[in-house]
Amino acid sequence: MDIFGLDIWSQNNFKEHHGLLKVNYKSSPSLLDIVEQVRQDGTRGPILLRFPHLIKKQIHNLYSHFDNAIKENNYTGSFNAVFPLKVNQFPYLVEATLAQGKKYNYGLEAGSKAELVLAMGKSDLKTPITVNGFKDKEMISLGFMAAHSGHNITLTIEGINELKTILEITQETRLTTPKIGIRVRLHSGGSGFWAKSGGMDAKFGLTSTEIIEAIKLLKEHHLLDHLEMIHFHIGSQMSDIAPLKKALREAGNIYGELKKMGADKLNSINIGGGLAVEYNQNKNSKTHNYTIEEFASSVVFLLGEIMDTKGVQHPNIFTESGRYIVASHAVLIAPVLELFSQDYQEKLLRFKKENPPLIEELRELNKLLTSRNAIEYMHDALDHSESLLTLFDLGYIDLQDRSNAEILVHNIIKKALYLSDSLNMNELQDLQSRVQERYLINASIFQSLPDFWGIKQKFPIVPLNHLDEIPLRAASLWDITCDSDGEIAFDTSNPLYLHDIDLEKEDYYLGFFNVGAYQETLGMNHNLFTHPNEYTIDIDKDTYTIKNSAKSKSIVEILSSIGYDTSLLQKKLNLKLQKSDFITEKEKNDTLAKLKTLLKQNGYLRTTN
Ligand SMILES: *Cc1c(COP(=O)(O)O)cnc(C)c1O
Image (cartoon, rainbow, N blue to C red; front, side, top):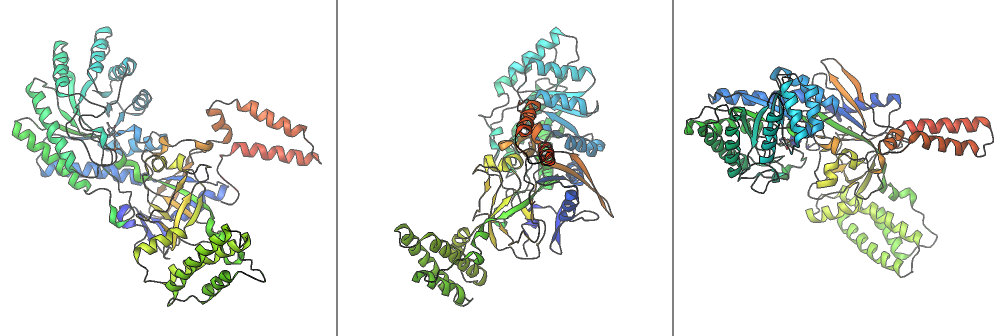
């Protein structure tokens, strides 16, 4: 049985066992167990789980495959990597990544002043720091301060003006000059969603004319010995490896040319990030077509070959893949609050003594439907449904009749879908979208899956239990924001089916996977929902431990963060209640206490789930 595409996207990180979704590591806890433990203290709403062993796994994968490729190809340069902070700057994540990467000397990449401050504060002196993105004089000075403090830092210039600023600072101060990198503007671009980081119209990088000018300037100022790296980045989530190969040829040749021009200390090529993560849970649409092994061996082989042809020593290789390192480590868990098509339950039928003839016919169809007549009866029902809606518009039947008709037709379609195995694909999909189940989830898509909102990036979605039952309900998901964009609609080309659950009897949770890259700081506080409570799960061979690594912001905190004087707000709320009529003093105090508690919680729903 294909279980929510686990085979496709999960890289063996998760598995199904007796209907439960489990972490496939050491004692293999079930996600449902973890969630139930977390909720014992009254925590409600969405939660974010972090699994440090998955960060460790990805860092190890990256280094070991490159190390193998280096050995196999007799490559003489070294392999180095930095984690691009823009992918996820949350404290726990950065600390865990540095800790797991320590033995490899895994470094950090910064793209803004705040990120650079973070990188300087968090890394050892010898760990590499690379700095990309647009920089003003202040940011470049910060780089000089880092170098002066002994950091192993490379400032990658994105344009000639940045180089001129570097030259200015060397003249104005006696601070240590950092290593300099040049981002090259390649002719070749990437492929996939985020391909616009490469190519001649890219936002970043120096053209060949500018590179020649840069070398001239560096020579004139006796700084050519600081030029140690060239850099490119052809875009995130590369779907195909061919464009990278083209970019490598181009960059490799630029590297060789620069060596010829006297850049003797030039020693590294930084190939940027872009290693893809599989987000698809549907067999016919994998998002990328290469493995990490193939990626590493292509890069190493190709660079070796280019350099051997040019008679140039093999450069050290740097990568800045971020998505690949951290996407898999985080899972968002959202409780389901409500199933909407339960409005169509048969118990809600209210027949009259005299019903319109078409309604009576629907009743019969509903009663007599079997696997043998399912399709025929369903087609009749669909026909009747059209006629009944017309009769309603013309005023011949009333709202109660219409409600009865809707419930009956809905149920007939549901039964037919369940009983019949001879529907053609088109009709099946059409019907499925007619009887979609809307699952209301206690989470905000804007906060926790902003790439779905912004660019329709899909994430694998899997319920935490019932995995040994075939899910039959074509599902669309609604979040609790009051914005109609907060919906993951049923998509016939990438369908999601979930289970029919009676939420009065049991809880049902959905896991959203591979959310560890980009989503967290991109997430926005639309409707003033905040980052969910987050927990770190350390798993060992007999058991596991849960640490609450960060609490979500309370209602007071979120209001305060956008500029409200919250003590004044609270005073006003209190005063109004104080002044209003209460029968007893106790009632008043209870109400005030309730308000106080509410303000200290986050804004997610608490009533049921
Ligand atoms: C965003 C970015 C990265 C990281 O890209 P991933 O797709 O997350 O690997 C690396 N380098 C630069 C310059 C970037 O802008």
